[in-house]
Length: 393
Image 1 (cartoon, one colour):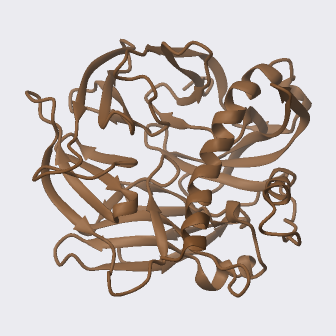
Image 2 (cartoon, helix red, strand yellow):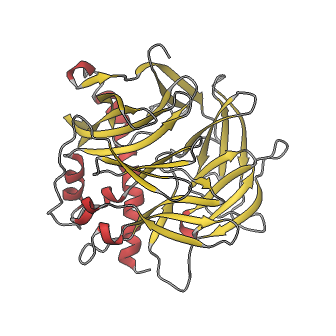
Image 3 (cartoon, one colour):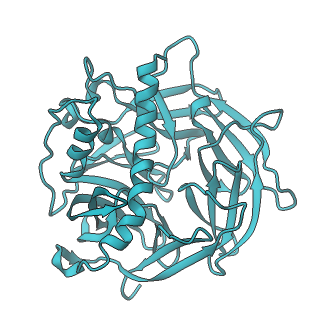
């Protein structure tokens, strides 16, 4: 891969995290006095009801924003988070707000899984660890009597006879899904702005067949991406409805939601936000980070989509320009309003609020009580989440 391709891929993957780390603490304090009723809100919307705080020890410190929720067979709720620096996954009891244990993975050797920067789990016997830059996914087991994960299998997703076309990633907004004996992952395509647009080159989904180990790339970008767009809009989001084995996709500048069923049939549903504005194509200099970021921050787009199996809702996040500029440490930040659309299983809008919170790209997980959002804290010994619940649920 050429140097400029590497730089672009790295900038795509690091910029959202950089914005998140810069903004997340500022946003919590800078907008605390905003009134929610100054914003559009209608129908069924969740309300913030409390905080959940986990104590952080030395093993947990410097944790990443890769967080997952899992319910055991006996109904206990667990929160798992990946520590990229410590080669480990921390496991917490949600109700008790305390750590149960830490498990470690080996990077090299016969049980090595590489430098992990993404993960998901079907159950504790089927945990998938992603080594993004090594282009491999490892299937491991978290044992009850060992602090080291047990490697079952490793799957490659790179043809070394061809050039690299994308960078895979795993996050809450794009989980690792297993369906029809295939591992499904999101990816960031390599875009050459001087000669290629996203619609034609945007391979942003990888499917790996676990039986024959073959993999393929898929393009989810729609004709709306035929103009040249900045790297922020390469990201796709999807969620999984296990009852129907349905993949449900949301793209940043597309009002429609795309679904792909277990037979490969593709459908589209118009799910337009009441506050949606037509996006403006980027006409600036792609090498100018300030212009690229300003373009992204000053217009409407859709965030990610989540399926809530407890209430059988879909949540589609929206992003609009925040009203205020935050200044901290001598630097000005323009943050975005994060809104929420609540949809039923047929993708009909049940409610929408323009203002759920302020931030860049929020980190959420869904539990029995409701929606949990990670918030920044000045106390390095704590990891804190806000809880949003639906009235009467």
